[in-house]
Structure formats: structure tokens, C-alpha cells
Image 1: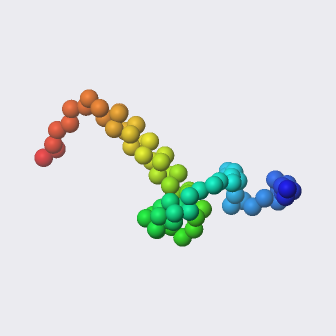
Image 2: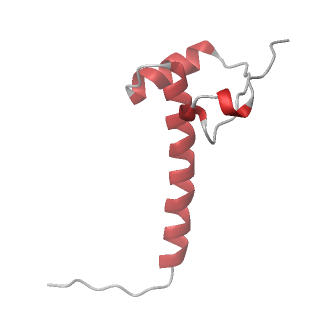
Image 3: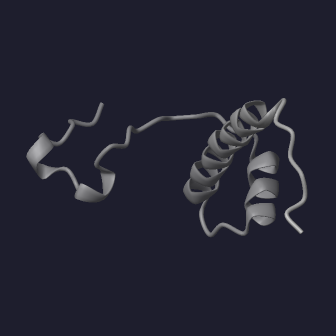
Length: 74
């Protein structure tokens, strides 16, 4: 097992991130990468997770608007 670098030696680019090892279906990953137009598999996974969070925010916004009576401004 590789020895972890001391905190002072870690790259600032990785700050706030965790390392994970995943088994992912390569066909689905490739399909997502093509659809999203991402350059790397890592970027694909990060963007997909960001889209899931955004979807949750949209759903919460829709619930917040439920019951409001809106009318046209013109």
C-alpha cells in the first residue's frame, strides 16, 4: 500500500477532495463523457455529480414555488 503524503506535501489542487476507487461500467462512462463533452473520465464523474446536485436544487425550487399564483407581467 502506498504511503500517504504528509498534509503539508499535498497539492493545493486536491484540497477539499477525497480519493475514491470505483468500479464503473466503461460503456456508461464513455457514453456520459461523449454526451457531456468532457475531456477526462474524472471530469465526467465530477460533472455528473454536480448535475445530480443541481437537479436536487431545481426540485427544491419547484417545491418552493408550489402553490404560488403567478401572472404575466405584460
